Length: 142
Image (tube, rainbow, N blue to C red):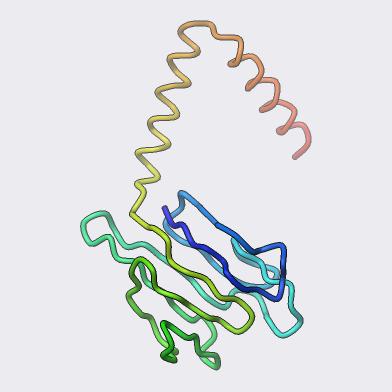
């Protein structure tokens, strides 16, 4: 899980909190979890990644070797360990690290599967709705 607060951006729609249960956020123009609408930004330019549960370290990596980012007033162009309340500026985006921790995606998927199995056992009506949506999605993909 990663939570950041975007404090400045060339794209005003991005201002505010961004929160994901994933262990990684890619920032870029047309590709990425956070997409910055600016002609000088190409694809993915920066990545935030939480390491495994034991280490629980947040890494910030510039994906374009020709560009630097600013961390708490200092310029960097390589991977850096980040901490809560760090401020990052990347070209046309500034944000603060609010919170982060490793999320075991497999465990979450297993929990969802267990809950869905219980709903099936109980013949809960939501199962029928999910099946209808699933079949419509499959028809749309064929």
